[in-house]
Image 1: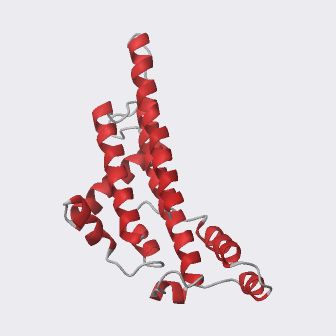
Image 2: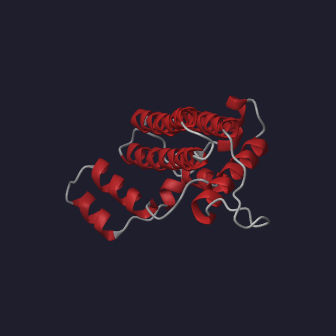
Image 3: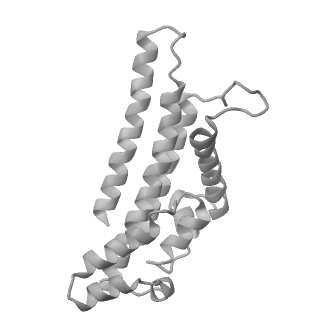
Length: 200
């Protein structure tokens, strides 16, 4: 679990570096050079970092449960394993391999960005009320965290799927600046840290 959090921290560091690059390019050039896509990339990479963190926490948590190092959850007990995983288990292949590979394969097509999907994923490894726990750590209500996260993910989707174009002003992108982006990355960091702490 610690490795998953360390990778999350590293992924956010790399996202933040793009902000530094944007400032450096802006300072060395004229306003004719648009660095806003570097800022947009920070949002996309930050949400990706959170998504990856949840994937890894769930994968590692499922392995821990299968090894008896973590309490079984209702979600874990209902989780469907393919016959190939059962055959691997019966042939003596370590849990870390067959459980880890199965969870990774089954979740590969899913994104854990929406608050409800994140909570569903975490229920596989923990019976906590995720957003209430995160809210306690961040001194916010669960609803406020979920609302803000949805807004961040919505902006990420506009960038990733709609080129961040404002439909009311065709040819123009939604406004973005370093303050908005820094606040977003910081929020994602705090949410990810809190999810990690709530699930270890």
